[in-house]
Length: 154
Image 1 (cartoon, one colour):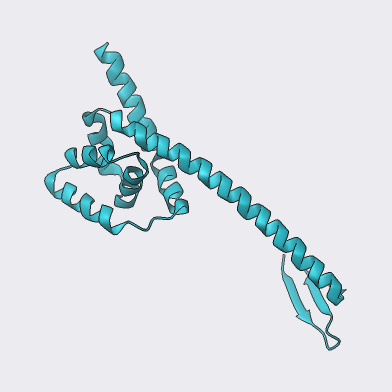
Image 2 (cartoon, helix red, strand yellow):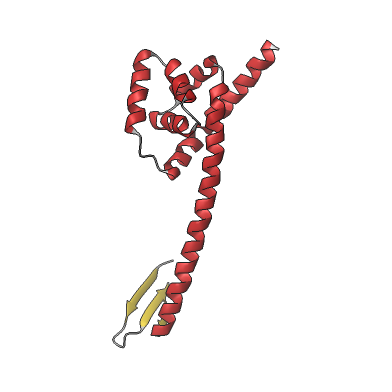
């Protein structure tokens, strides 16, 4: 739907919606601005709450990766992009996952990860959610592998 807005010679606002034009007086413009501003604020507030819930969930998932066996972690690390791995490590509580990742990468890849960790220090919450959504299948796979390993050891 195409929406156009312009003022005519008399100062009235003309709003056009797909060929239909409305002429609005000045007082209607103020009310319309308040209404739109309120709706945008509601949407932004809802998105912020949703984003915070996702971040909390992803933080818990990342923290749980600390207890995954090294063999399981080694199987999923090479399939993660650097920004995804850095995001997961940054979301985890403390530095234990950072050290575990370093321990389970080759020396060269460990150095590269440390550099990436320093370089990707400005990740937004939205970007963090996107990266975590992308690696969610890998985390699920790691959880299943860990469960199978524990079952075999019992």
